[in-house]
Length: 91
Image (cartoon, rainbow, N blue to C red; front, side, top):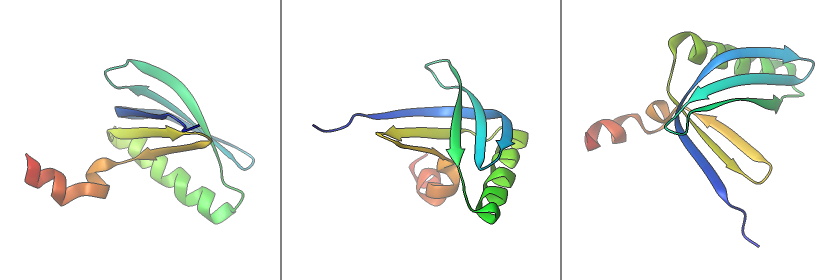
């Protein structure tokens, strides 16, 4: 049985909190009017710090993100940073 992929674009972060290895990220937006929280676990302290700094920057800058969920995997992605020049060329 193939798992369904959920994709939501134009979400922004409005809060980031750390509890132990877990990073809780509050998100809202998209045409689906999403408001919720996602929990990521980063056992490695250095990786957790890097991810928290990135998430806090996205929150501060109100960076539009894409949420992709497939099975047990959830990703928040800055499409402009990932696809930068390709997105600009298509506009």
